[in-house]
Amino acid sequence: MLFRLLSCIATFLLAPSPFLYGAPAKPAKPKLVVAIIVDQFRYDYLTRFRADYHGGFDQFLTQGADFTNAFYQQVPTVTAVGHSIFLSGAMPSVSGIIGNAWYDRDEGKIVTSVCDWEQKQIGGGGGEAEGPKCTDADPASPKRLLVSTLGDELRTADAKSKVIGVSIKARGAILPSGHRAAGAYWFDDETGNFITSTFYVKELPGWANAFNSRKLAAQYLDRKWEGFPQWDFHAPAGSKLPYLNIPASPWGNELIEGFAEAALTGEQLGQRGVTDLLTVSFSSNDYVGHRTGPDAPEVRDMSIRTDQLLGKLFKQIDAKVGLRNTVVVLSADHGVAPTPEQAAQDKVPGGYLHADLEDAVTTALNRKFGKAPWLIPGAGETALYFNYDAFKTAKREEVLSAARDAILAIPQLHVARVYTREQMDNGIEGDFIARAEMNGYYPRRSGDLFLIFEPDYIPGSSGTSHFSPYAYDRHVPVLFMGPGIKPGHYNETIAPNDIAPTLATMLAIQTPSGSSGRVLTEMLTPP
Image 1 (tube, rainbow, N blue to C red):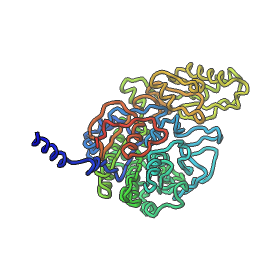
Image 2 (spheres, rainbow, N blue to C red):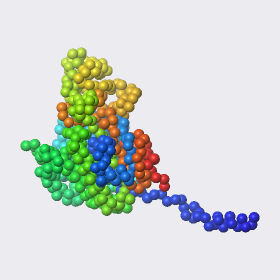
Image 3 (tube, helix red, strand yellow):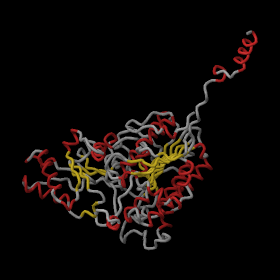
Image 4 (cartoon, one colour):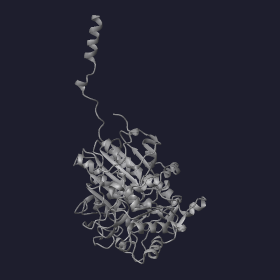
């Protein structure tokens, strides 16, 4: 017994003690987070073109976590909404970003998601004059985004952290990077420069001026797209925007990747002893996809080029920061519908919508209530805005109900559902489409009638678009790669809203204020 007692005492004294050595060390925070969003990139582009990927997408799919069933849960599925969700996790019903543009009743104007006439452009050719309609050429800021982003919370946790956003589109640079970014930069069709606004800085930093001084956009005007010589990237004769067509070319994404590299070096991102955030939105895929549709060879070529550009960017990150010190996430802001021509070839119902919806509604209301300016023309993407001054002769509920009946009575409009503002205010229940409408509804900014077209029917007469609650517009990649992430394919259904709270948990910072997503714990490695 004495021998056993002495043995126990010896074992206790020789064993590692938590009091001597402390608790297990927490994994170090990454030096850099790179959040990439590819504008108009359906999930099936990863699988259809997999054999052609040998760069960044290949790294994601072999070394990272691939969530195969990520679906947006709101309408409309458009650029501003997807970019706002990406690093806020917030639905439009909370963030206030209900579309690329909407009618602001307080201002009495159509506004874009980021236009801000209180600011001025920095580095561009103009865009300082206020007009009756806010456009993509106007100065911009994140003031219309009502919630915080991952970058905002990162800077709250450590004010020394830097957040930089880069895109061709202003909304693609601004909405993911948030309110407290050190800079958000986008392309100017007039000068070919990357520009910003006075919301961020009084003048472009030296590294941005140095990049712009290379005049790369001018060099791309005469370059031919290998395999697609019919594409011409010169602006129309007489245009004051000589670089108008550069975004709809492979060189648009090359400009974005090059400027992102310049920001990485110029701002010393991930190289300053704190965690920094770089957001990059590749916009050119969207411009090309609208013209051609998802089944065109140009889309395949753009996808392969994006893979190569990602690989190039990752090499620079590895050289400057180390990929072992970097968390990278990639998603898309939306998918896209097949062209009606392709739908017909596949024997699927679909087509272009040629009927004038606004004219049909106005005619029906004039007949029932008397002639009046019932609508705000061109105010919504998938909703109708009514002129409330016209309601003096009839109650709003009666007018909206009559307009709804008129729309559903016209078969060539191919409208599957119509919801009224009263229905939305009372809360509609039902399937995924009804839930998507509620997730996209913000009363002070949303319209009065909300339309869902039948699958594969789109407005216009050529090309294709995206805005619907159908899978081709909602199914997008969600890919993670880096320290603390368990590689593999994860087939459970998730939402892009889950990205922001997951990154916040990995960084041990506050979840963005409007987030509705969950933490993707299944891919996180234990400490």
